[in-house]
Length: 128
Length: 107
Image (cartoon, rainbow over all chains, first blue to last red; front, side, top):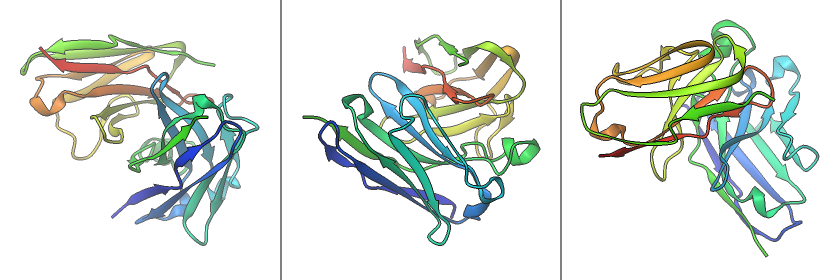
């Protein structure tokens, strides 16, 4: 079964750090981009970060709201992707989803797998 | 950044109704548009990809269309299990952009 499972959520004070993990199974992890998407009460669904696949050098992209504070990384040996969240703000509170992304940038590799598999999410609460 | 305006933000409809939800992009795109359904307490579920391609296992009453800056999700005959919130996603450039969502409620 193709699935992704998040872990690592919790409560933290503003300015603190938290590391989320996502374990992937049932598919060739190295072939796929992986995304983090969050859902906050005030801003609905928001794309947070992307780790490209092995073929594209595991390069990364970030939303402006988290650039410089969050770092996405992958462990190919463990089929996992992590989101290191530093300097957390109250507005980072929400449910964080790990999402399977495409296998490439053109044709079926782009469209067929685009955000087709979502985890159940892990909750992050930033509060004093 | 490209902005996605989704309308309506909420609507009431009856079982059997035809429902149309629209997403408008601030800049034109080609086929980089996805639709999701989300029910309370659940993760989003992909319904449509590349504007009009139905996800495997999704009922054929769901369809997507559009081009350029305007895209539409249509539910031809609303069923009880379709009451949910629907989101569009544009993946034309970074940052990837979701629409604000449309909550479909029972009339």
